[in-house]
Length: 427
Image 1 (cartoon, rainbow, N blue to C red):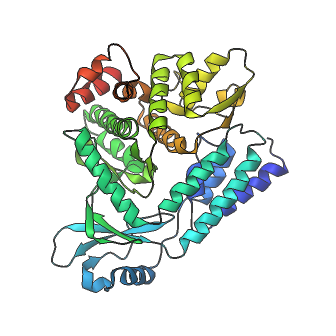
Image 2 (image 1 turned 60 degrees about the horizontal axis):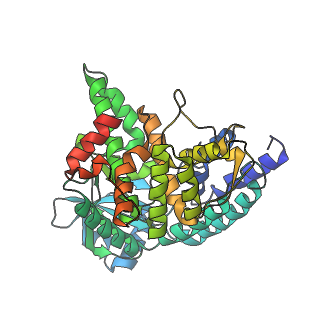
Image 3 (image 1 turned 60 degrees about the vertical axis):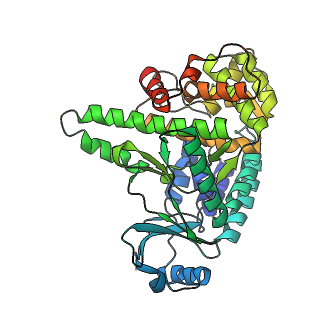
């Protein structure tokens, strides 16, 4: 695709999608992993902020949902939201008679119809670009977006997901690698959600904080250790959620990650969670082992099991298929590379057309690309597939699909020792 009329027309179309009360489109398309640089620049600059709902409209929403006025329920309710996005905004507050701060998540009025219209327009957009440069089944991706975003408008579903993930993380660890906010159950409705306030730094601002720490002697060493701990916590948490539980936080946008005291990581916003069927969970576990071992035959088997259909005319098809798997589902970058050029002529996505991609795997792919972006930003090049190997092995072993002696890592029962091995021996 050149810089002619089709590009200008569709760029303008995509930007207009972002000019409404939603910027989900920008979050998905406006990433170097998924779009050419010119597209990313236009989308990001056009969709940098979502508009906040005025306080009087927030108060009306709360009163209609809760049946009481804001003054009756809260001793303090901050006028300005501490965060806002396409579907809702969050205000810091305090109960009457309580000394602890809480956060109140309130849905924007009338946003659902606008959002769904945008998604349908986006589907028309991707059907066009699939006929040009992008030989990837993006339409299936937008269908999964439609399903997942639809869930976000029911905060009672989100509250149930938070409680389920709280339970799972306690089952998996003596000390959880991430923090899930504690829900306040007595004030949850379809459009209002109340939870504990977590004090932390948005991960987007982490670079500024590391720079501040680097000003003192030894600060750079401390910052590097902090970065490793943050990345390790997210990697371990998502490995357990995806491969062990099959139920995971499926909206890993940087705005949903807070860095707390002691480099502890908190995950926010559980409107999008994914319940991965065992067939896909185990198929993906098999693909993780293929990537970690550099096994192209196993990668091809995993493609078939997962329902990823490809068309290739490459001379070395097996090599390119494995390269494609690494591009889609691993964080490791070649030496000296800080960004994969998906749209270059040498890209595996250019050489191999992905004709069908399971909708339900999009959330997994999105998570891996987030971790890759974070690793580049933190200056740490590592393979999440290698880190997830023991979790994938355990999943396949428990399903009766892995024979013979297991990895030495599976003998490690103490979670903190497992974390130490992952971080200090691998990263």
